[in-house]
Length: 468
Image (cartoon, rainbow, N blue to C red; front, side, top):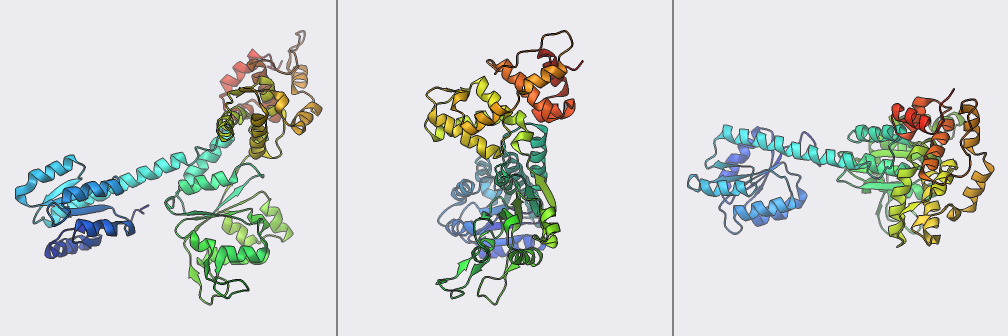
């Protein structure tokens, strides 16, 4: 993906003097000029170039300009291509424009006209590039299911922070989706066309993790038979995601800090540092501030990593997202297991909404996959839930009982607290759960459920849950 300062053009013409003249004019205007003397040579050069525009002659030996135009647009859609033509062949250039050429110039091209056309082409190229970036950013959070306020805040942060070069620290309990956030940040970044390399810092002991991150030279240790690039080098130009960085050994933390500060790494066994160009996204389920106070995590590294912090809420704090999460996972897991599953029963959803989900979305996915595998119906019943979920909910006092005692007007019969048997019952139960989780604060409850306060008020009246 191009940066705003790029001005790269490919000139394709079989006349060296003409290429030389055009090159001189464009270089004086700040362009980086690449030359090819034939269409065939231009196509060979293309993989190594990041172009903003191409200027090609209509008539050349071998592949002509029209054929090259079609080839270029097949490989680099949206690339502005300007056609060069002799005065007597203007009609051919007009035809080329109907087939996607950006503009045309007649030979010999006027210098000021050449500069003006190329300026328009550059603006167009940057517009196409920005459009692609925005599309990527818009799709960066597609797999992050949820419309509650806390999740909307997370998605907004990803879209805002993605295009920056800032180091970002993603915080959250295990199973909340920290890796998804890292993927979203990478997709929304200007590095989206470069690699996203992931490393789980808790999966390897310190010495192995060091060689994995920084690489090693042949003979650096027993078994090092060849040179091996590290993850920093593999991620060059892209993003390096350091998951569970709170588990990293303090000695290795110092080397990560140097890589961040000086943008160099030293492979094991090497005497020469290697330059590195990566953006770091780190994640942890630990409280790094507490780890700094305990002396198990370097304070200077913490501040280097936490230029911006994104906290992923646990599932129990966004129960309002459960229906959408369940619908998404049913479709995904049904395909994976070759089972057609349409929905879950209201009682099933009620149990899910009353469980505290210590394993978060990852645990929800496992619970649903188990139920899908065991189900003989297109609708999952609550009896398919694992014992630990059912037992936990059975031992927990039903929220409906306390809610009706505290919120039902005097003299009125409280609504039944039995397990829901309809969608209305399930919705009522979800309202009670959200109210209690937010200490009956109406605005926070509405945000948690992803609905407006007016809609919440209507639903509270509908189910007899208004205060006296």
